[in-house]
Amino acid sequence: MLVVEDDPTVAEVVTGYLSRAGYATDHAADGFAALDRAASFRPHLIVLDLMLPGLDGLEVCRRLRRREEGPSVPVVMLTARGEEADRIAGLELGADDYVTKPFSPRELVLRIGSVLRRAEAAPPAAAPAQILRVGDLSADPGGRRAIRAGRELTLTSREFDLLLHFMRHPGRVFSREELLQQVWGWEIGDLSTVTVHVRRLREKIEADPAAPRLVMTVWGAGYRFDPVADEPQPEDGPPAGGGPLAGGGLRP
Image (cartoon, rainbow, N blue to C red; front, side, top):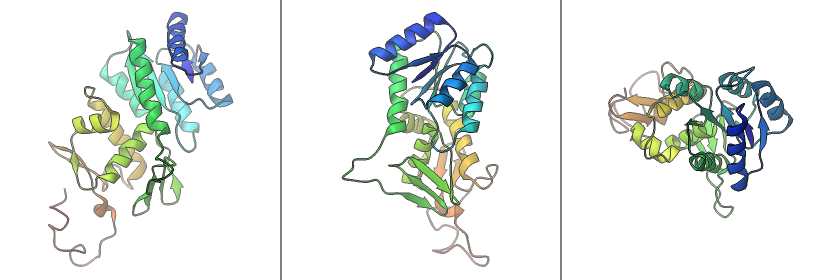
């Protein structure tokens, strides 16, 4: 695990708590050193401070995500900035979670553990998880891989969890509060976290993110995964299976 923090006192506290929790840790004090360390060994998770000398945490996250292939390294941002715009900027760059200073080291360890469990989750060997498919989109829960049109998608652990949740519950509307509880495991949290992750997921799985056909917004209610809408429809006549009300109602 890589801790990127320029304040030596904070770095010592964070690495100390993580070590006592059983995690092997390395430390980088600035953005350039963080990128070098991440390139020399692939950490299981990066604790990334936002305010860093050289390159700030947002730019470090941007460069990490740009050069990744396959599953993303989970990132938990650690920052003194509490403004919503800063949190959203980190989430849009692919951060999996954030903790705002001043923080409880115990809470940070718990949040890191939650992110790692989701990133490393695998089904029991005796009951392999079924690969989910919708058109040319597939998701493998065991391998934590998503593929569309023959190309593997680069998803963060939270984006992959969100995709699985949608694909396992097609046609059901989830509010942002429900998604925060069921995907993130948070009873209380910033609902913009869900909004940003839905936006990022659409950018990766939709043919046209500005006119989504898979992850639909249900105004005033939440989001619905609508797999039938992404399937080719005959040029003449109604969709197969009935008229406009087939499948449970009119589509937005």
